[in-house]
Amino acid sequence: MSMIKCISPVNGEVYAERPAMPLELAKQVVSRARQAQKAWARRPLDERVNLVLSGVARLNEMVDEVVPELAWQMGRPVRYGGEFKGFNERGNYVATIAADALKPLVIEESDRFERRIAREPHGVVFVVAPWNYPYMTAINTVAPALMAGNTVIIKHASQTILVGERMVRAFVEAGVPADVFQNIFLDHETSAALIAAKSFDFVNFTGSVEGGRSIERAAAGTFTGLGLELGGKDPGYVMEDADLDAAVDTLMDGATYNSGQCCCGIERIYVHEKLYDTFVEKSVAWVSNYKLGNPLDPETTLGPMANKRFAATVREQIADAVAKGAKALIDPKLFPQDDGGAYLAPQILTNVDHSMAFMREETFGPAVGIMKVKSDSQAIELMNDSQYGLTASLWTKDAERAARIGADIETGTVFMNRADYLDPALCWTGVKETGRGGSLSVIGFQNLTRPKSYHLKKVTA
View 1 (tube, rainbow, N blue to C red):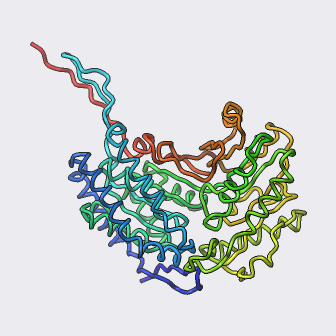
View 2: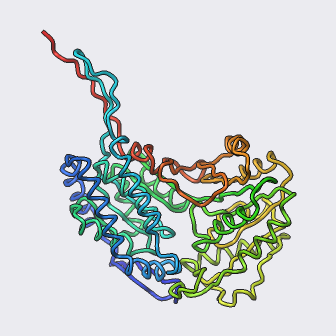
């Protein structure tokens, strides 16, 4: 039996491991979920919602276990306290909109006809969650899927192998039936085989572009619904009227927080020539204040990347860019903890352009490139010069200008004067190779259900 292992970035050793479930046993898990689904869907909506909220609350009670586990598994410093703020915000918000999002659309209610469009759960939803924000990304789908009457099977990335196990434990202890929400440990081949066998009614995957392609290939011809949030290369644009200090603070945090391992992290910044020099100077000072080190140390502000191979990709992109003329501005002597492995110093590059992989390919690390621009049109052209489109961050005092520019950007979300945030009231979605579908908001509920029409002609004397 093969083992799925989490190699801790803290010390390079195996932190946790679980046996990969054989295909036949995995099919039994799916069978139990399918058998439990109808009874779960028949429960009153408010009962389902309250049970999910109880699961969210129960997980919060596990904070002393969850926070150090995250540090060991993927390297986030314990000083940041886990993911409970976003986890709670998202779970609680979808609970407040569930009734409205799922209520029927009534076309006619007369003495002759009843015509309406209802929302029905898909059935069994398979959530394949990533390692970078393993709780927050999972709750985006788990909470509304369960509230809508689906059963859920969750599979987490090997890097955060304990997260699905802990989430399911919390929800079951809070009263969600065991077969309604199940955790499963699978290798890629078994996951693909289950999808190809039409085991699931909807699959939600958050991860790499290649991972998304694998999911699509496995689902080909099955007509299984898919939600895919894949890569990103999110830009920021600082206009000449921006609040400079606020832009530096937010964009540098967006580029480096969580060691840059954020789906909507800022990876490239375009600054109007009037502010460029000052923006770069302030950004270098901001990033230089990080303390790189062991994430279990409360003084650490920047932990290791989740895996040394992820850090190797960032180093390769930086080295390639420098060889092509880019200038690295962060003094490596400030970060002696950079060990050439998972512990990676942050970096800012200037003299960059779009011929460099660093400005085109997903970096997913604590490094960002900054380019000077002369106009909105130039900035728009550069922001759109990407195979990805998740978010874009615009910095200006003029909301009309931001909206006008935003309309021309190929992206899923337009931010003005903020970045790297997921608003649960809005649809989280992307374009191009960032994926398809959308989570959270009313639209998230729609994607986790299907429409069913009722045309009832009433018998009259």
